[in-house]
Length: 144
Image (cartoon, rainbow, N blue to C red; front, side, top):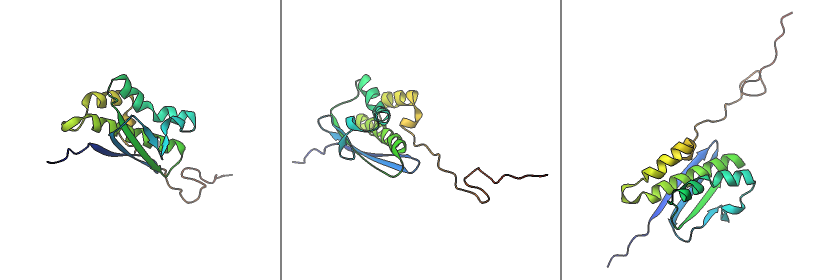
């Protein structure tokens, strides 16, 4: 007799140089970021932003009892936060999709709220150029 395979979904999210990898599987409803509960993520603004996909899914009655483990590295606090919310939203859309793959209703609601929940932000830092201190700043010229 073959054992029934438990459903596990792996997703990722990126923002600048931050990368977040999420694993969604059946469980008790725990969400952990780097082995700590998402409820104690600091600062508070970062926590509220990272929990947006969970709040939307819960409002739509799409948040089933799943355990979500997220590992992040690279970037800063807000870059990691945006990467977390992208990985979280993608994971929930794929997990709730069933055999066909995607939960279209939840996906449309995420896109209506904020496109960056499902799509990585492609913007990167512009490199520094010569004759200046940064990407745009230049030495001032004086023609007298």
